[in-house]
Length: 599
Image 1 (cartoon, rainbow, N blue to C red):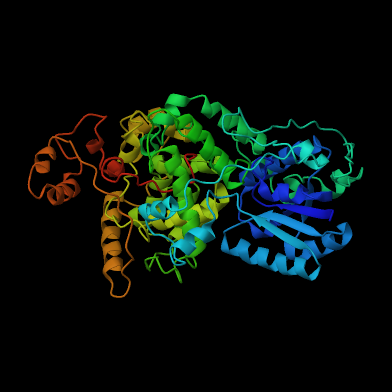
Image 2: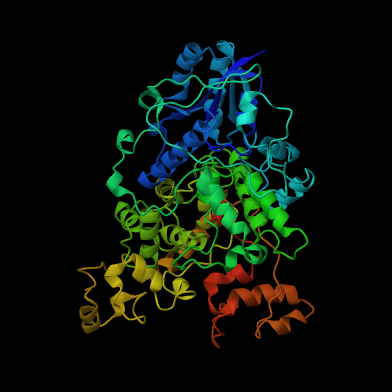
């Protein structure tokens, strides 16, 4: 049977490793590649919308190279599809599996509509390394709550599947007997360079076994990619275009990383720097979030680099970051109400404060803690921040200083991040707020000391908060402590040109520690078993003698908690120097906000 097929793009905005798209092209005489825009269903801000529109234009250009086009329709899928099924004579609908609860409900509704219209539905897994339903089934339907637990389950499944072949012109012409896909060892998946023209003048492909895309001259008017203005977004609010969206940009970025063999093999996520003026990680997370880059392609390219070379290991390696991504996807798929406190079975129930003024100050970068404000400014303007920067601002908002619900922070990140992935965003806010997974709530990121670890001079602050650029390094993290004469010389009076601190960190963090302890010990609200990686042997001079003691391990744990990097103060390269960086030394593999190596 020759089908009239719709491939429904949602995530998976690519031609490489897209098995659902290949299924649509098989035994097909008419193909409609479709993307449905539903602006009302997203909290995304202007930068994220720009990234999406970039990706859609890039995808349309790649399809155009093969005589096809992308059809962009606005509306609710449940309302759009009945009209399209009828207008296009559709007999097959294909799409990539989406694990998010709202997406699963949407897809179930669409599948019922398709059944009523006599349309075959094909779903394929390609947004995750593994089929999350299968992983959950291996664990009696429950999400593993530890990284090691997930690793044990995945070990029984073997390595991830290899990427599917890239869709090519030959697929549409019906030449399916030839292996046209990317194989391990080749340079890259097939790439297509968009060639833009007015209207729709791409050739229509015909053949005895081929398929074509009906395309009218009015295509750009009826089904073209809209502008930001047409979506109700203000184009003046976008920041610098540092990370253009799309498959072409994703594969270009990946290709450039693959040339850095030594860096890839030695990569350890916790050792990257949050204050680097250019990203110290891959920044592939936005491309993975939108599916412009296949996670399986990334995995197997890394595997090829790792072959016959010494390399870092999970959870800190690049493969380890992709497994963290899998961990949170599995948790999001298996835990009810994963993105909220109430009704979430693994979430600590906390009586958070309701303080709109403090929330607004945090979001707008007006807390008067320059390190926190610089991070939030980078987030608002560029749409991306380093994972340790995410740790710092998340801790400050919740258990560290402001005692505001992690759900409020989740909403802000969902709006401002290019890589605001539902499962990862929720899981890491649960973690960093001390609400789930992570139980060492007494470790608080200092809004002053933490940034100094990698940027004592404050270059990062000077870049994102130019109002403070002329403060001497002594006061750049605490400008309110600068004498009036220093403030005048710097051209910035605290309280006039830059605000006074909205809280006093020492007092606020001490108070919140008590509140968190009370919440955790409240009867009936004890959190479930948390993730705790094994102790990493400590070789600091004050800890080393404990290793020889009969009960050394127990004493070592106690000693570490009380050591806290106090004097004598070690050198800059010693992890004991900064207690907030305990994660680098004490927990092997603690890496929240890890969409991938990407952050």
